[in-house]
Length: 148
Image (tube, rainbow, N blue to C red; front, side):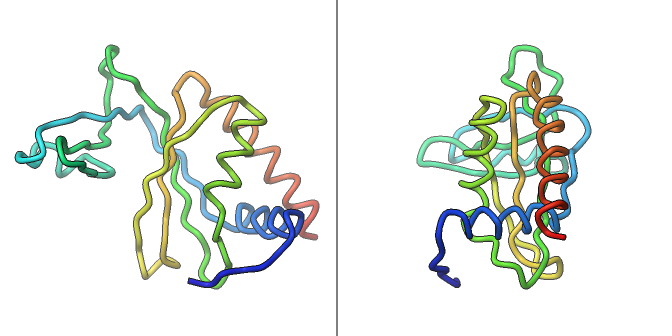
């Protein structure tokens, strides 16, 4: 992994460029985490889950959900272009969203070597999705202006 030495301003400019050139897709519907014991992989979610994560006690699967009792999220995905240094992106954008719309996020990463490497699934509370979308549109305009 490449380690860059840059000022906070340089980091912001670089990551704004990464943001503007990344593929951003909001997934339809709502998602929630479901849990099952660590010894019993949740096979019933294999075809619908975006991610499976486990600790020493449970498997946690991120799946489409309409369960009104569950904490539900709007999920979006970033695919990063190859050749751009996206190091620090998660912290940069998470801090930006906390400052701008007041929300925290969760992030689950994967890798697709055919599409530039690392990709991220991000989740925000579904109640604030419209504000996040509006903030992303504003951030894209800023990126387009600054990267002319």
